[in-house]
Image 1 (cartoon, one colour):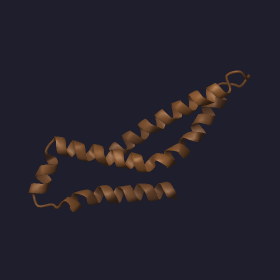
Image 2 (cartoon, rainbow, N blue to C red; image 1 turned 90 degrees about the vertical axis):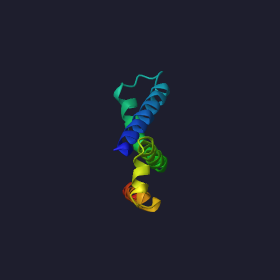
Image 3 (cartoon, rainbow, N blue to C red; image 1 turned 180 degrees about the vertical axis):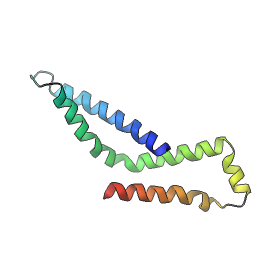
Image 4 (tube, rainbow, N blue to C red; image 1 turned 135 degrees about the horizontal axis):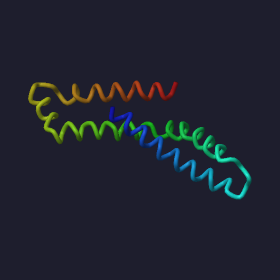
Length: 103
């Protein structure tokens, strides 16, 4: 869930930056409004593909920070789980997300 939240946030940020850049490029010409909008929408997935590892890292950090701030990570460790067992789902999901991004 955190991954999707961060992904949507970065997508919107990249989209608006690309949109402003596209508007700047066509400001003196007589181009309709939907052309820069389409340009920004088509450029955003390529930029997202470039920063997807950083998004995965930020979502993992946010997840572990939330677990740590509520002392859930301490409770999980006290119940007998090793750190590798706690990290395995995050690493597996990062591998799956990245393999989907590559394909």
